[in-house]
Length: 64
Length: 185
Image 1 (cartoon, rainbow over the protein chains, first blue to last red):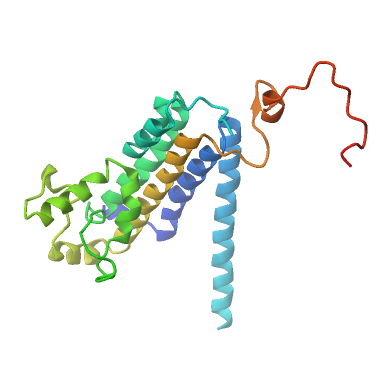
Image 2: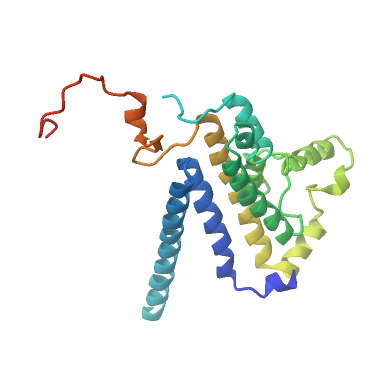
């Protein structure tokens, strides 16, 4: 448990986003190539939006 | 619209999917998807549970209108993981009847002292663990819906035997004339 405490909180987002992407994509499609492709796109999109939000908040933080 | 995949008895599949994530799909013969759901949802749930030392998933019988601060909204989401989260409800029922916990206290409501002690010790892990377990429950709702209704599909048809689903379900008549160019314009 102490090892988990030393991990930066941001890393806990990764398994969550991967699981959400896979389950959502699997609920949309039946063929595996489409599931993988959809999950990869969704995962990249969620992580991209999160990264953009972090950059935006950091920028705002520098101005305030 | 009929589902393109055999769903056997969709209600039984949905019940099985609630009981154990992925079980409904395995019952339908969609083993790969069942295992995917099972691995993703149960991993999230149990990792989250371990992060909170088993004290972040429990239920207590409280009227949310009278005491909204102590109402366990999180368990309403966690409940959808199925049997792994069900003991929380049973433990709360036993407590309301004045009986002791079963299953070695698995998912029983922790004492106030125990709850107060985990936050200084684990800090953010308790919160992250709660989020993991809540998301696991919500994801299983998607899996249950998939077991009941079949895959939703995206904006384009899934190929069925080399044809699109629309073509496969309604083959053109053998002597049908070819569509004139620009007929749909």
